Image 1 (cartoon, rainbow, N blue to C red):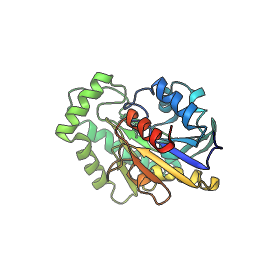
Image 2 (cartoon, rainbow, N blue to C red; image 1 turned 60 degrees about the horizontal axis):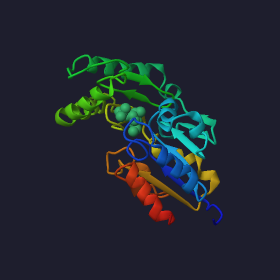
Image 3 (cartoon, rainbow, N blue to C red; image 1 turned 60 degrees about the vertical axis):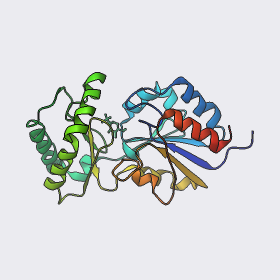
Image 4 (tube, protein in one colour; image 1 turned 30 degrees about the vertical axis):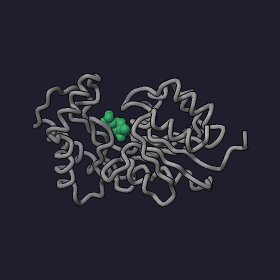
Length: 249
Ligand code: M1P
């Protein structure tokens, strides 16, 4: 096989390498590590935190095999299994603004009724806050039930409108990253943030693969960024098919 190219293939996780919030298949994992990685460098970028990404990859040892793992849009950044940098939304916003946000969200959530409400409504991460109306500790069945209810009643979309209105003076982005939650982070801390960490490597090409690449989707900014070649995928199987064509495997 020819020498590895100075090219980075960067993948979203949910809907691109795995079904939403589920685990990667052994077949796709082996394909990436055995067939793709000898040809190009591999990176992941997700809104999720490190714990969730590791769970979805089936272990820290698998995560460590990727050249780059960008958690929370790259606000937490691992390279070859080693933690390299971490941004803090707390330092950025300060306690007062952060509490204003959390209190507003808790108050808003206390006034809506849903088919189910569970626990872990506000997850405090290093570089972002994740707010979930149904609660992150819901079961898979409750998650799916929320998705249907949310599509019909626009629970998250209306919540985002209320947040945008309340916090119009603070430079925050409220993004519908996944199925049951809203990611809140300072504007600019979207997935393009991770590109700062690869600038030094001077890759000849950076390919990005994601499923939420239309405006409003959390892959849109990196998909359309001038430094990337964007690929829209529809499922993990589609990702594999596109990789086979691109790399002639
Ligand atoms: O797909 C990325 C998103 O995954 C989760 O979303 P949800 O649980 O709502 O499906 C969250 O970790 C979210 O932060 C992340 O953007």
